[in-house]
Image 1 (tube, rainbow, N blue to C red):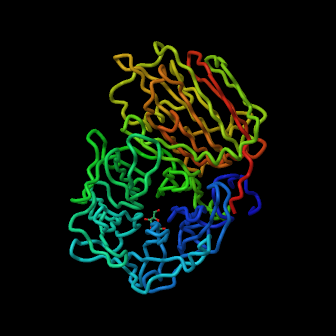
Image 2 (image 1 turned 90 degrees about the vertical axis):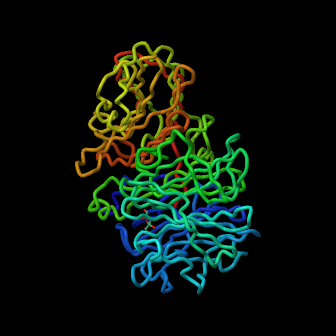
Image 3 (image 1 turned 135 degrees about the vertical axis):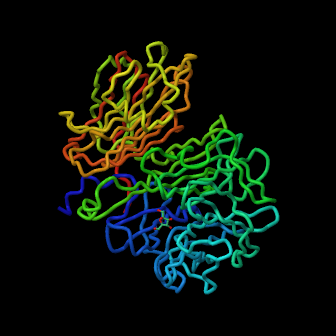
Length: 536
Ligand code: FRU
């Protein structure tokens, strides 16, 4: 039934119907945020791709406009794929995007706003010089592996640079192009960066982060107290990976910091469903904001039945952690305007071994929940084995039903009152031989739905916190079919899609649980019912 829509979101961005994927060209112009995204105007599966467009004043409530970039030239007749916006000097936004040409080749095109005095920038015009960049045979660039231009950055030499994702066999890399006028682009001799055994790099993102503050930086910022982030979306695994490193604009080389793993064993923005993400610098609030696409865990047949597929994650503020070794992400504070006040609170509550504590008085299918645990003693924690380096494997082996000394404890969300369906987001604390703690965060979807057609993969991440020194925190944004979770104050993120059959709407329940053999203390718990955002 088309009208039966228990999985549509209350506050995560999605259009009224049809397929969406990557966020494209996010930016702020004259105080208005723009979100473009890959969209199929004709159905709930990928195809016929255009750039749909919405604008907002707060990143949470959105107003839709007609698609802005759609096939209209030879250089994009077969599709308008992902790309980025750059704000040129004098407040002039431009978009670079991948067009699919008549030979199905991937080429890079430019589009300009038709009327800069229209704050919504509803109409865009394309250059008749398109395509500006096309695959060549010099480096054997395959015409089907040449896409997704980044936001451009300008060096102190005034020359613009842009990176484009590519691969040769399983060598993934970011091709660099340079231009003086943003129209004539010349390929650099060497790529910005390349990594073996990674395959195609989609939606490359490259930007500076401050080492001494949480403020965001304009994409062209260089200099002291600046590091760079290179993010790659790996087509082979469908995850977004990043390294932090140094960028030398004279050689135009990016080098990841020592100790960080480059490639698909490295750090992920999000250890669950989150792909093809892109950041932009919010000059109004001096922050860098991350958008990401949350793809489906349902079968294609179910997507077609419900008439839509894909949502965008809540935009996240992103900055370098104090350790310098990883990024931290946190939902933009504007989201908090949707919290109904006051929250349901729990303070200083002991959760005994095996206890399930129901949090009542909130709309459990559409909520924002923050919980912190206090741990004073890890002597009862299970011993950590050095070979347990794969967090997702560990979460699968020790899922929410496996009792340990310190954990699993956390939130049971989108749960039915008869415990037939539920998703568990939880921590498990281990101790190493030297008595140092290891914190594992898991999102266990194995019991999330009685519908067996769903992908119920369990996700996991290690969280770099010492729970003796600071409280162990978890925040989950629950939105009908989304559970977007932030562990350790945003040092590990896991997003899941779940589709319960009975635990929907007002039948969904919310609990805090402790399935360990020892008790644990909830220091604080605050749960808010969330109002609906204007999303379509
Ligand atoms: C990533 C991606 C991009 C491409 C777009 C097409 O999800 O495959 O590489 O430009 O989607 O819709």
